[in-house]
Image 1 (cartoon, helix red, strand yellow):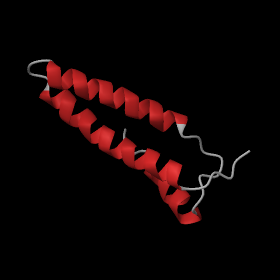
Image 2 (cartoon, rainbow, N blue to C red):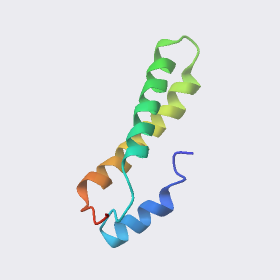
Image 3 (cartoon, helix red, strand yellow):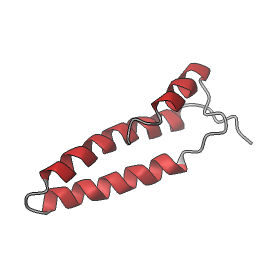
Image 4 (cartoon, rainbow, N blue to C red):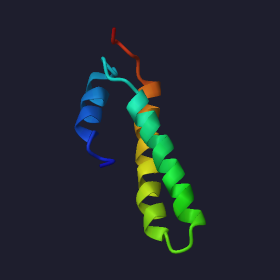
Length: 75
């Protein structure tokens, strides 16, 4: 799930523009993954929840960083 937009990000990086893609879905996924990671850390025996969503946090931080570092040439 977290790497499914990889094709889009390859296109964004190659064109050096976010074109008309919005960053909001990636920011929301980052927040969601962060909260699930926190839950997995504080709930005993939920290490799988924490590790899977921790990976998602890392991936989403990279996506969001790309979005904010490249110019937006949308509408």
